[in-house]
Image (cartoon, rainbow, N blue to C red; front, side, top):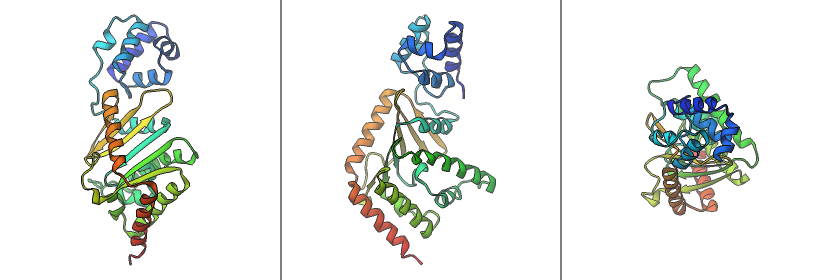
Length: 264
């Protein structure tokens, strides 16, 4: 996915006879960040744009024509998926459904089955494969570090029926008990909390600025603006402070699993 801004940056870099690494060295940035900007997946901060202008002797052009931040990107989801694979820390909040990387295959099919207009069996299979591939990042025992903040509604909504939910919650319990994923539950009794309006994914990296991804009905936004990302991180931390501790969250998940296990 390209962008006019990214394409222009690439043209200026190539006209100056610089590789991405050479430009990164001059601008005191990382090569991967330059690559993401040129591909249209990231928007540089004002400070980054200033350094790029200096490195390329382009006056203040890159600063002046910075794209408006936090626009809905046409391929927003693909960009978020690519960043997800590179993240060292992922913090998820889910208001109604289990986050994609934590879903079991039957649960995925239950979610996909509610899409309108209905998808073909081939389209469903393709999406399931994509989601299962995303979950492979959890096969590494330590990286990325994953935090999942779940509204209790996620556990109470019977996606796919009792058997599917029992398997899904047991999967979450296994991840939490092994320490691979830290899971906290926001109980329904809490009422309103700071993250209730929608899904949020926060991603941190070794060699580039943090990013955030939010999603609504048929829309998604990849947030690049440092100020917006910081605000979303603060909102997440506020909700985390209202969530149940790990031990109590596990107890609630076990109780939910037991309820589904008793279903006929």
